[in-house]
Image (cartoon, rainbow, N blue to C red; front, side, top):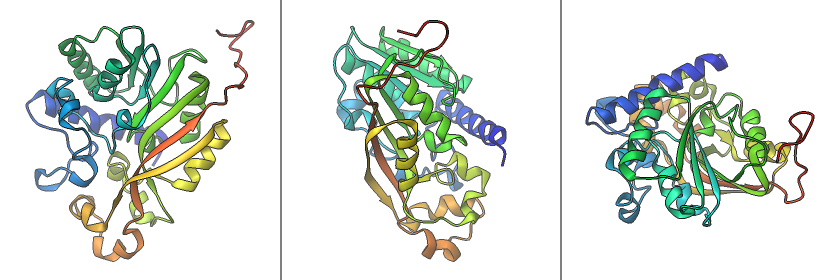
Length: 286
């Protein structure tokens, strides 16, 4: 499938997810509508505790399509600038905004109009003055060089067909010493083409997942150091049986090849403190 086709499939499914929340429903399995109205519980359930849920509007929680909780795993300090790649309904942006405080700033970036509308409504309901939601793509970040302290993301980078560009852009906008701290779905070992070729699975956080060694290599190529991939949940074939079956995959046939090869992981990396500031014209950016 072409890059443009993948992008349109992602936009359509995530737009539908936002509308479901607005119409009184909940989110589904990472944006893909599961069979029988069930959600993909092993991926999406129990990511946020009750104390976090109480800090944000309910619709932000219902719109969560993530596979982890980056805000629980990364250190955020008062006054820092945070950017969430693929911010959806805004749950991780709003939680981050509370931690960086009034002297800090939390940006959310999303390409889906319906999600941006929902996120801005959640921002108003939360009374978050230090939050800004931006429309754009994670392959082309609409922020200056060296302007962000921390980049977070929750099960979104795997959806991009150009992950190298995403990571280069993340490196560009981070300040020297800035931290990359995302939750994502990754794989361990080869995955059958029968899964990767399914369009629905790009939207469902599976087919686009990188092998953990490839993820590390791409981060290193982009310039990052102190790279770590920490598994947070490892999935068995039964965890995804209904989801895969609804996408037309013969689960029993491929089970031996994919069991326990998919996992949610926390991916950390750091932009070197001595990284030269890139120039953006006749004079360098601040």
